[in-house]
Image (cartoon, rainbow, N blue to C red):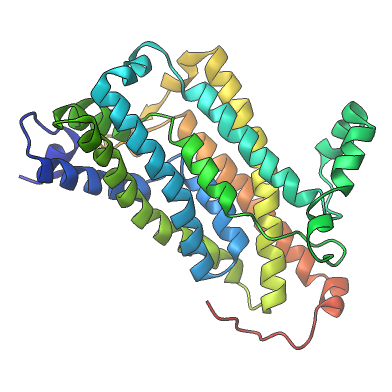
Length: 321
């Protein structure tokens, strides 16, 4: 009974426990498959934590915001208000909002360090004195001064905000819980629990994914200080440049919605794996391209002779998780 076909095409007349069980299993599938609304953001925050425990925490915080949003979305589905998704394609605007939030977090991290990106000069010319003042009145003014070139800790509370924003994008899994499962519930509160349980399943897998992403910062034998440096710089650069990628794709999808439907089918019925399209390109661009390059660049920076000489010699070579 509980085969893949049943999960992806649930019939009507289901009991509450079965609906919640399906929602949880769908959440596990959603969190474990490459999704443009989860993986790029989870990667960005998890890599910045640079420890397995930190990666678990990043996945937990992000998924908490995501679960709250999904609870609200399934409640709207029960009330019939989610039908707006059937009329308008909101993926483009959601990509833009996620991109702006990612770019803002990345800029927040980079503004207090001596790491400069190409857009910095353009923003300097555009905003002039306001941009310079905002740069100097930063995290560094609120915390103990950081060594030159260092990036402040990645603010995990922003991951919850990103999770809530990203959840408004709707894909194959969301269609099932919003339009097939939530309307079968007896009232709006039970309908909200469908999204919450789906978010819980996503949370479990995102915590695992986050832990795996965080361990990428430990692929080389580095000291704790070096891994911290690599993780924070990778996270900052991925959020900064990845946010721009999200905005660009969002504007493209908004202006030319047909682009989103251009995909190569894979023959797999599972959403996120059923085709290779612009969403997959976005994941590869942010996680594989921007994230991978940022991680490589971070390693190059900390392993440079000058950085090696400046690194504290008392740090343990194998840090705790």
